[in-house]
Image (cartoon, rainbow, N blue to C red; front, side):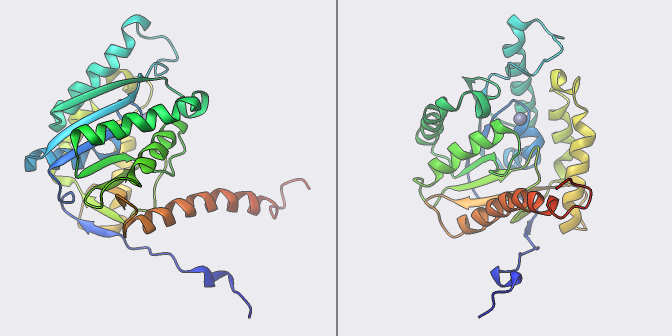
Length: 269
Ligand SMILES: [Zn+2]
């Protein structure tokens, strides 16, 4: 029997659409760097807070390499990043914060810390007992986002099915299975982003974020701004399959571009 390329399955182009976050009273947000959470899911966090949910933000790296031009005093820099995260979190409605000391670029230069990182994520789950966990999605191209996603999804395998893991996008767009309209709280997300002064000196994040969140209305034409997610249920439930598919597709995209280059007439043999 001939196997055609399309026999491997057709992609599902239509994610679920919603106007509010999934149900869940206790919400844990893990970010590799202070600002990832606001960029990736600030709209949903503001919606959670308005609904009266409990929010704990954990930032895993110190953010120590976020000032390559030395604009700030290095002795105060880590604390400055943390204070910005507290200010941004408070603007969104986050009540609790935890800061860890993993180094920037841990995903590239400190992989020996992986089991420690995974244990710290596990401890956060054990202590806070969340229903929802927001984390960078696994296809992120930034090594720290990816490294943290690996640790979270590792922990997710042993979590109960009542816990939903929500992969958010920062540097790399995901293939979402949930898109949420965040237009009504967009002013709150913008106010939170504006707190990250030290990072806005390097990147003009606000229009970049507008662009991504506007792009996400592709699925949701009546919305003005949306955030997109890849979901996975604790203990590898039903939705884990779609998350795995998205992640597999991302790695295939990487392989595909290498494969296509072989047929590019401009490339040398
Ligand atoms: Zn980041």
